[in-house]
Image (cartoon, rainbow, N blue to C red; front, side, top):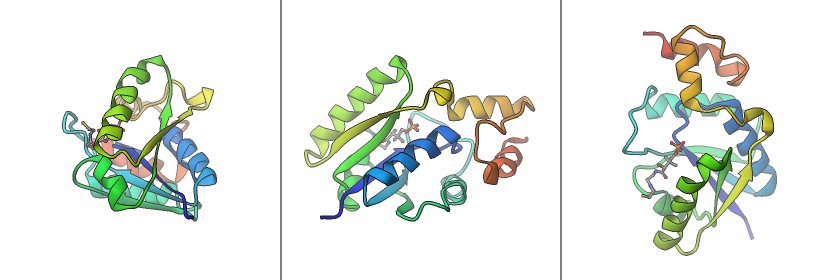
Length: 160
Ligand code: PNS
């Protein structure tokens, strides 16, 4: 039986923390769908198409992944792609409340799906897309936060 997992997120933009979680998921599952979804409470710096392009570039070395986008609920996205697992990275206790709520809602909406949490590598505990955006907008060095292949695209995309 083929085991498919979804790694969902905004990826605005992709960071080394995302790449770490997706790489580890790709070793645990046969197929990993990297799903660029929208959180309606957020305003995005990069378009969906650009976020997908950056992910494809950053993840080009991993054979069993596909980058997709889906308009709607993560629970429906899992159904559509036959994924029995949702994989999320947990950084700190501060992530827990929100992620716990999401996992329970997704289970209600799609009882077939299990959410699996991977603890982030300690060197990425502090890292988030919003930190990357903030540092880059103030002309700080983001080279240790994002994959090298997309560094310039991200810097250019965040210049005003
Ligand atoms: O990287 P993020 O911003 O933490 O990702 C959050 C995301 C996009 C995965 C989440 O908001 C999501 O699943 N959006 C799709 C809509 C949905 O299913 N919402 C949860 C049920 S209320």
